[in-house]
Image 1: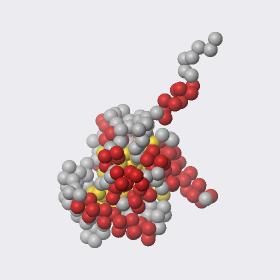
Image 2: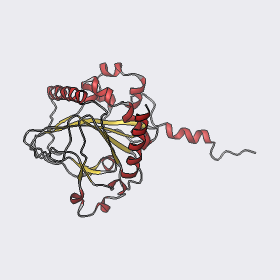
Image 3: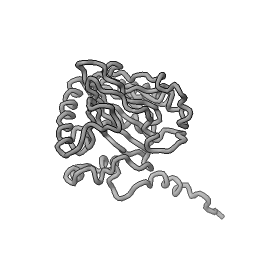
Image 4: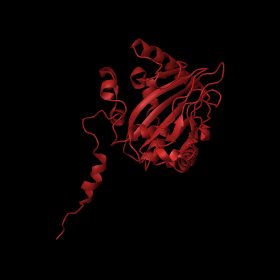
Length: 267
């Protein structure tokens, strides 16, 4: 527990300062391989639902295998989305009021190309981006290297408040998040990044992206619709809360004002 505390402290310090951190050995290599096997099975189940694993608007060719509906497809993913260490990192950056916005996977096979440069927060919040309202926790199910398509990011770009501030040489400043299988990469939602190109001939790069936002932001996925009634019935109150499935929503921030008696006359 002491080592875990020290690891979390170092990771969160880097996350606040640099906008990202890598935490190794969150899963063992054997555990990561097991999750990867379940991910391939989930991809097949996703296709059987009539869904495509190649999105032309995101990737230049079908060598990228994208899987959505993870939380509905296999309980192993519902376990990862609430992994304590991951939630600790989310809580450190966003505070106590956060929800799960999305959970997807991207397996970059040999020959896969890069998608467009973007920030995850810019996809859901208009500029200016003044503070962290979102975070992506990336689960590495294989080793992620520059050669096999590790996520590329622009160092320091979490301090960019408007698109015009990126500058004309943004792509030239990209660097890879390299990490071993079983690691997680926590990334401030304001970091500008893209998927790397897999230039190997025999390596897959499998990543899963758990995207969390402040609770006042609308989620990318409507979990009330995306999750089957059978899965929803299995969820405990904590996970239902993380997914925003209850009838009450967006009340946590206002509770502070109600408790403060702002503007009340006292005499």
